[in-house]
Image (cartoon, rainbow, N blue to C red; front, side, top):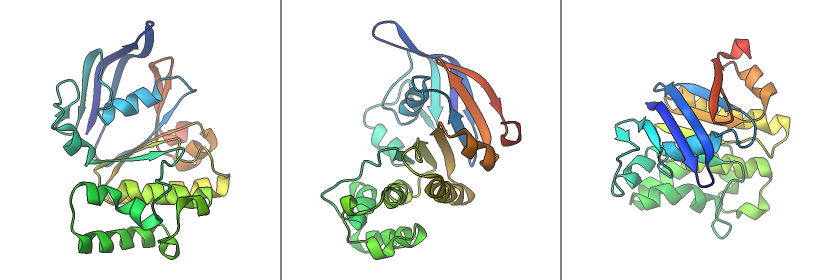
Length: 224
């Protein structure tokens, strides 16, 4: 599903973001990515969604090779990926319904399908009563649930989440992780970057630990 093979990435100024990364994430896995700020987590995520390319080595996501993917193929790759950000990135001038519907509109789905599918997602994240609300009138937890609904509405094969609970209290963090667990149980491959080591311990998933651009170790949740 996601495969990094001997991947190096160097930015201007000789900053080595990634050094000899070997990583394989199978279809249907749930994997945590941990490490300090600047460790290389965001660079890994950018490569998965074709916002960046390796300087050497190879990255494949499904049937797509990130080294040689064409600009015309990128939109099709991204339709198979859902992304959740720490700062939500919701459109302030659009309602909850409109924010969630965005990926479906982009790919040209019909109005009836969009109405029904967004309705399902609103129910799934417990926000049906907020469908016509604008993001600035939602709590942080509600905004993150909208972001997750938007990331999952188009049935992506992969969900990547960059610090999805970073701005939330422990109770809301658990609610968000429960939603990601449900998505994983339905077959979505989930890859989550987080600083929350206590949450990682409680979730008992595979963990990849990165530091200074290197994968330092990998272990199961029982070994955290």
